[in-house]
Length: 342
Ligand SMILES: O=P(O)(O)O[C@@H]1C[C@H](O)[C@@H](CO)O1
Ligand SMILES: O=c1cc[nH]c(=O)[nH]1
Image (cartoon, rainbow, N blue to C red; front, side, top):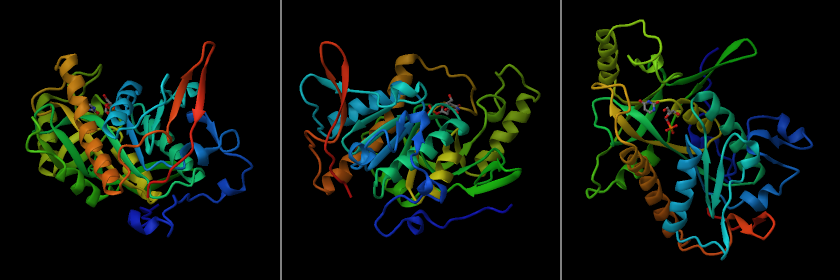
């Protein structure tokens, strides 16, 4: 089966900017249960809960995405009513965590292509059911750098697999389905322009390799198994570096392919945890790693703030979030009226 290209993300969009579902079956269903998000098209009023979403930010861990939700709340001046706090909307799924701050959704995606792929199917359907128009998706992650120091921010120009192919492959009904993994080049350039000379770290753009494994799949010498030599590893690392690969992680291929197929603008911004030409293990202390992880978030926050200020929507107060209202006996989900950010 050849690579199915659905054109550029802009070509895929409906004229009103709504998200394209390339699945005729969904419209025929009485309800659509977004099982791993603990949401449903009949059980929840998805339009009023999520209709105002503009930015969907994904990252590996629930904690990172919770921290991002709190920090973006400060950055965009979003106020919660007194006595309330942010609530994990998908907490009863026990799979992913989801926070909503006005037009921003922050969701954890777990590790690897299968996990992010399942999430993207459901988040893209969520955008469709909620009638969100022209959402922008970001992955805010960590990675290993190649020839760059730990703590460097990498904005992906494109995503390739371990064989340097820019294609997501998935066996479907006994055949290999191939989808091009394309990211929005303009969005990547805009993000790069928001890196500041004052930042005490570098922000670079380049090709990202996405693998199916952290150890052997990324040519590490420190897994439980290793059938190659250090010289073999270094040869491979040098070859992929020459092919333009500046970092390696585990989700960009699926993220790029599924967002592109849905006509959604997307970017991947990751911080490097080490230079894989020098070592394999994550040696930086916890506090350093925590600060490094905030760097992609800072860049994406700048983009969101600039976007909202250009639209005159900064300093949001009141409506547009999901929150937890403390009552003496229980926590209650409060859904607020929606605004649109287009
Ligand atoms: O967003 P995260 O930090 O989860 O991204 C990378 C790729 C894998 O998910 C994980 C491996 O440590 O980190
Ligand atoms: O080396 C690394 C670091 C983080 N995530 C990865 O996938 N690889």
